[in-house]
Image 1 (cartoon, rainbow, N blue to C red):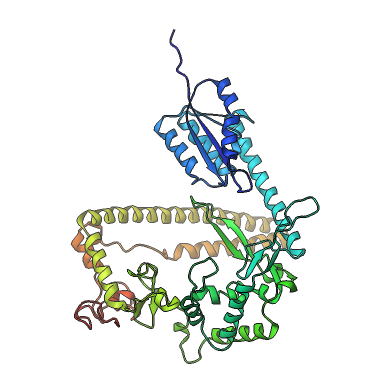
Image 2 (cartoon, rainbow, N blue to C red):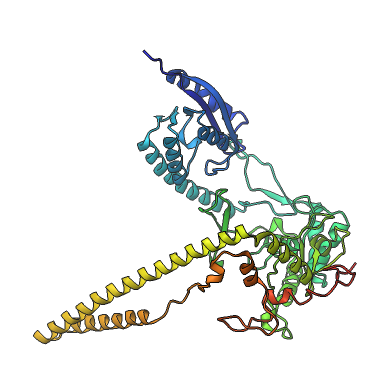
Length: 516
């Protein structure tokens, strides 16, 4: 008789908060050893994810476990409970499908052998638990704020106070003013009210060696922030003794593997505001002077056209890095890129500004030579044909559905008209007839309207020739017109990039027009 080989077992443990001991994950895996002895088999690996949320798929231990499952080296997983592996209903279902596909069993101390039914139930229970946990947490945070305690992150210039309640437990959210940092806040408010910009203030603080809120350098955005969101040093109402909570509603992005959190700004009426005079640093007169300055500087200039008041995005925004300090390059003036560390923080010695046009032209030229090859052109042609077929098929299905509905509406109109001839026309019949005639007119209008979006069918482009695609991507000559469209705007980047294509830089090299 053939002996069945012993299953290859792996153990997994996880705890989510730093309040739990560092050995919590290890204790979980050790508690599984009795179950391992009952199931039988050899433990080949153990995975731990300390201080990791169960709502994250990118946990290091879980990633290693999944890699071993896909490689076929695991037969059985043992953990304390299913919620150690996943909490979100979507993640639980995904994990169940993955284990079933690789024929890997899951046993837990709490649920025993976890089959398809238990996976489904666990997903439902996890969703209910999450909803209750969010509600309880928000209620607790709101109660703490109403009691004058901070329920969010600690603002600059404050330090936490350690105090125990009657039961010997620490009271959370208690803050007090940090005297050393309070002087920095008063300095920022005084200089801004006197006319200094946020860039100048950040540069001076960095020059004086003052560490920023997170121990690094000061940025202009740290000082100025956003008045609408009440962020930044100058907009923090806590400095005038007002604790504001509930400005933002956080939510997780379901399309992200990393489960990053995003937020929306709530209506001002939903904010909770409590007076905390013990935490006041700035007086009302100084606060009002700063707010007046912010409002005055944010007003659009009457001499600047409306189209130029909003800051435009540029081709290489966020992609250029300074070789001296590693900071990003930001637009400076009208036509130059400049190191943000030198411009906004004053911490970099690189004062070279690079002209925007030649740099972007050189970048596009590199992309053209690297991407517009025969292979890439063929891939483009294939994708073009597939997308064209998809759009054509979608348009045909939509037209057919309109034709089918139009036939139904026409029959209903004929039936209503016959009923009205055979009997007295009631108000209900008249209303139905009017609705159907209006719908018929709308459907006929949709059929007579050509498709709004349709790709330009060009056999020369679809042929997949790199030379042809390069010709299609080449900028138009000045004054030329598109084949089927109006003349390109002067602000179109394609025209703007070629303005100084054939001119040498100020220092004899392309893009050398920068100041040194």
